[in-house]
Amino acid sequence: MTYQNYSLKQLQQIDAAHHLHPFTDHKELRVSGSRIITRANGPFIYDADGTEILDGMAGLWCVNVGYGRDELADAAYAQMKELPYYNSFFKCSTPTPVLLSKKLAELAPKGIAQVFYGSSGSEANDTALRLVRHYWALEGKPEKNRIISRKMGYHGSTVAGTSLGGMDLMHKQLGGAVPNIVHVMMPYAYELALPGESDHDFGLRAAKAVEDAILQAGADKVAAFIGEPVMGAGGVKIPPMSYWPEVQRICRKYDVLLMLDEVITGYGRTGEWFAAQTFGIEPDTITTAKALTSGYQPLSALLVGDRIAATLVEKGGEFYHGYTYSGHPVACAVALKNLEIMEREGLVDRVKNDTGPYFAQALQERIAGHDLVGEVRSIGLMGAIEIVKDKTTKERFLPAGSAAVTVRDHAIAQGMMLRATGDTMILSPPLIWTRDTIDMACERIARALDLAQADLRKK
Image (cartoon, rainbow, N blue to C red):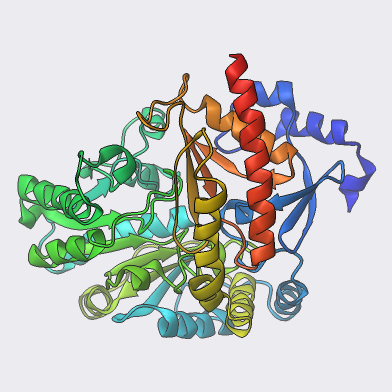
């Protein structure tokens, strides 16, 4: 590769001079220099200095089958040689999105058999927003256009995605959100449960916030409720098992569509193909991306329920929406091979019955007792570590988020890639992790916590 002709310092200088990164303080980056990752294999990534780092984030929630899969590279190469691109506009299609749509319909929860493609989760959520509002207009109810979302939810970085999400810092830079979107409380028991309140009761109370918002707006004005089954970028906030069935009951009671954002949880992360199956619900739409191709190609898939699809087909006429790369043949070829690998290796069942339970046990036994840890929680291979100054009172370090960054930096130095979100450390590893890999991760995280504690005591 041509990058091998450049030193690390040269790459960092070029990066700072020309590359604007997502979610980055660019002035700070120009001082510190970027971490250049040059290769990866299995569960490990390697930086430009050759340092081996265990990837606890699967890239960015996506590399479920791990790195270095020749089968995925071969699938992309073969498709590029045969047909590198053609559009899916104007009544055209290509074989790979056709076959992928069939496969996704087989894997999806009951009542979903249609797929609309994009290149990112943000695009998928934009499409979902447009589609549900269009659906109600086709049904003669154009005033039914309000969307209920949640505080600290994340649904992408486009204008529509940011508006759907509940991240205040993102809203402040938006310059005006898409109208008619409201945000209710998140199901975050660690900070929001009342003294003595059970998980079950808290889940019902958090769900009632959705009902309250519907009643305040008027059910005849509310199009849909959108939420991540497990809030990912907001800190792996796992709802009680009572939450989602109650939200579904409420949505059906008031004829409000249920939209799930499974960009992070889709394709095995929670021990089922979709977290909707984990929580026992049947949504009207599911947005997916990331692990659909294990990150080897950019691709998103909006899974559309039969109710919406039937109206779109029978009453909709032409749907004036789409992307140049909708149903990209190379990306879809990679997705088909990726799903084949996951099925062949039984990765979803492994997460459900082996590595997921072991991951939860390891976090509880080896991490939860540390002085800096207020709580650990996990579902499947997706976990969070709450960093606190005082375990009893849940007091946080100041400034907010600083302690988690300290832990993260020590973890990376120990060969463990974690993400810090606020005061929470996030784990979302490749699904190929084994019990041995989990043991290695816990050892490195424990060392990082010890080193961070020593640093924080000095301040």
